[in-house]
Amino acid sequence: MVEQSFVGCPLPVFVLLLSAAVSPLRASLKNVTGDVLGSEAWGRVAAFGDFNADKQTDLFIVRGGNELRIFLADLKSTPYFSPKVKLSLQSDGVLITSVVPGDYNGDSQMDVLLTTVPSAEAEPNSPLSVVIYWGQNQTLNINHKLQLNNTYSDEPHVMDFNGDLIPDIFGVPTGGQTPLITYGGEVMTTGNFSATRPMYVPHSHAFIDLNGDYTADLLLTTLAADKSVQFETWENQGGNFSKATSIVSKPKEAKVIGQSVFADFDGDGFQDHLLPVCEDDKCLKSVIYFMKHGSTEWIPVLLNFTYANTIWGFVPQDSTHLQSLPITLHVGDYNMDGFPDALAILRNTSGSNQQAFLLENVPCKNTTCSRMFDVHWEISDLNQIKDAAVSTFFDVYEDGILDIIVLSKSSSEDSAIHVLMNNFEADAYFVKVIVLSGICSNDCPQQVKPFGVNQPGPYIMYTTVDANGYLKNASAGQLSQSAHMALQLPYNVLGLGRSANFLDHLYVGIPRPPGEKQIRRQEWTAIIPNSQLIVIPYPPQTPKSWSAKLYLTPSNIVLLTAIALIGVCVFILAIIGILHWQEKKADDREKRQEAHRFHFDAM
Ligand SMILES: *[C@@H]1O[C@H](CO)[C@@H](O)[C@H](O)[C@H]1NC(C)=O
Ligand SMILES: *[C@@H]1O[C@H](CO)[C@@H](O)[C@H](O)[C@H]1NC(C)=O
Ligand SMILES: *[C@@H]1O[C@H](CO)[C@@H](O)[C@H](O)[C@H]1NC(C)=O
Ligand SMILES: *[C@@H]1O[C@H](CO)[C@@H](O)[C@H](O)[C@H]1NC(C)=O
Ligand SMILES: *[C@@H]1O[C@H](CO)[C@@H](O)[C@H](O)[C@H]1NC(C)=O
Ligand SMILES: *[C@@H]1O[C@H](CO)[C@@H](O)[C@H](O)[C@H]1NC(C)=O
Ligand SMILES: *[C@@H]1O[C@H](CO)[C@@H](O)[C@H](O)[C@H]1NC(C)=O
Ligand SMILES: *[C@@H]1O[C@H](CO)[C@@H](O)[C@H](O)[C@H]1NC(C)=O
Ligand SMILES: *[C@@H]1O[C@H](CO)[C@@H](O)[C@H](O)[C@H]1NC(C)=O
Ligand SMILES: [Ca+2]
Image (cartoon, rainbow, N blue to C red; front, side, top):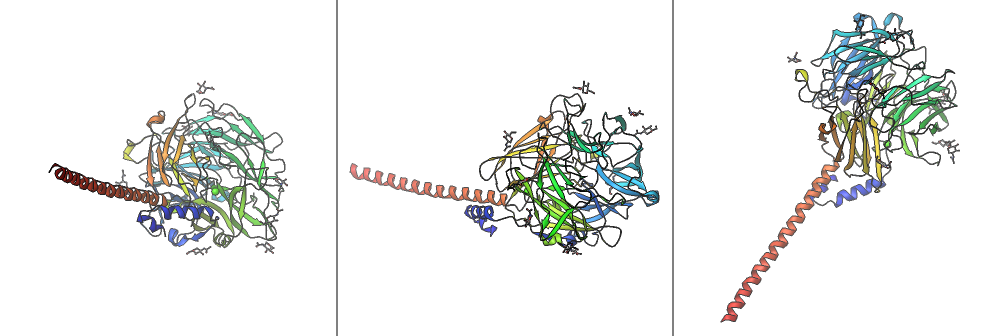
């Protein structure tokens, strides 16, 4: 049907767009586990990142508790992912509890930070050791590592505190209360962070712009005097984080607090705070709260977890089990309407089954809120996965459409991995943005390519005109959270809805060092939708010189539209040409006749 538009007339495309605009959302997923992972679909997917700098995002998978496997993506191979890089810590007698890829020494090659506990005393509250394995020539070596001097009481938060574009490690050393920051670089140094309250464990700190100045701020989850969770915002002011600029307490009714997550939930270009909670200790009554940017009021955006006589609820963390995770939402714009959706794991409160559910961001039916979540209860491919434990978004094949990865408990110690392809009809548009570190560009040491460094902190915002002609904004932060299986992607996919307009403006900002007043931000105009943009903020202190490389996604409707338009232009030009030629011929004939007449008259 789409091929018609090649004929040269844009009408079929136009009709296609019109028909798309009235068709409702159908979540259609396809099980592609076999094509993507072959027979290797087991283990715990712990992180994402482009380890071999080929612009294809790879999977970091932990197997047997002590082996890290990096599954490298290759478009030309079947299956798409294959376990290439291996790092086994079996001989060290430790279990890997978390994985955070990043370039911790600034050589533009991706390293891997692991937190471990001794396997002999693996308990949920065991002190965590932090060790960085240095990536060298796209391999990891068991002997080429750096062990941090302290052990930590919670998984560290990886961010760029001093704005030098090298990730830093923020965490509370065991036995202490003051967070310690270990600054990345060739030589690692440490500094204390002047927090006044103890940190909440498990934390959900975030490093993301919360006030719209494109510079990442710091959100800390801490404990108030009455031991309840509170949220401290440390705004970056003039390059410094000197004090908490606002403190908000938890929603009043909340008993079990999940992980905070940040997204531009209402699509106004600012980051909002989403918080999944339970209003009782057993999680029989679950709620998702939302706090709009600039507000201090918690508004419920999902209250009704009842479907077909079954009451569903979040799965509270089991404090006796090492692998048990806090309540987490994984956010991504699944249907590309410009409003981020979410994935959650819910369990049947009266039974034992536990499943992944897609939560769609829809307009509010009630005047008390602007947007809310609508649960898709009946997506058979998701429902078929029994004992789901984790569900997150991932763009398989890098086509700009977010797919879904689900981990489920299996008979063995390792999880089973399920990959579900999002068959969303190509009637909505996106822009996919990845911001590199900007430490170097074409001049990196050892001629490495500066791709694949998982840079925390960049902030992205776009403005465009939606299908109805209204101004539409959306924003996202890159790698704002790293701990407790945050599973954030190293890139951001921003949905544009059903408007094939060019993006009016795309702004990108990065963190800056203390004392620097000037905001590091650059803007690009007229970005073609369905493009993938690689932003290289180099040199970081002069945004005017930053570059953006555009990668158009092949086989997209925008190209068809462009071809159709060009076809029309050629067609019109041809008609004009023919008319012109005919006119010229008529002119010539007239001239000849006139000349003839003249001759005739002259005679
Ligand atoms: C998905 O496909 C894989 C392999 O083709 C299969 O083992 C698995 O059971 C399927 N999952 C579901 C939920 O159908
Ligand atoms: C990196 O590895 C490749 C193959 O794995 C090898 O050909 C190359 O010489 C290595 N480069 C360095 C600098 O070690
Ligand atoms: C760890 O301790 C050693 C010895 O005290 C010191 O030389 C080194 O700089 C410390 N490392 C870090 C990352 O603080
Ligand atoms: C941080 O504070 C602790 C005591 O609270 C002190 O022992 C340590 O030296 C301080 N570290 C730095 C880098 O200032
Ligand atoms: C989008 O952002 C622009 C500039 O920041 C602002 O003027 C406009 O009001 C915003 N639009 C919406 C719908 O929030
Ligand atoms: C909750 O949603 C279900 C269907 O999704 C509906 O049947 C039920 O009436 C709703 N309950 C409340 C209290 O709104
Ligand atoms: C939830 O559990 C109850 C009790 O085991 C069971 O009757 C009900 O069918 C379950 N609901 C679903 C949707 O599986
Ligand atoms: C609107 O939502 C609020 C809280 O979310 C609830 O108390 C109220 O009953 C709702 N009103 C309607 C008409 O559904
Ligand atoms: C920010 O930090 C720098 C370096 O630590 C310091 O020189 C400057 O005075 C600080 N500025 C503010 C506003 O606190
Ligand atoms: Ca959406």
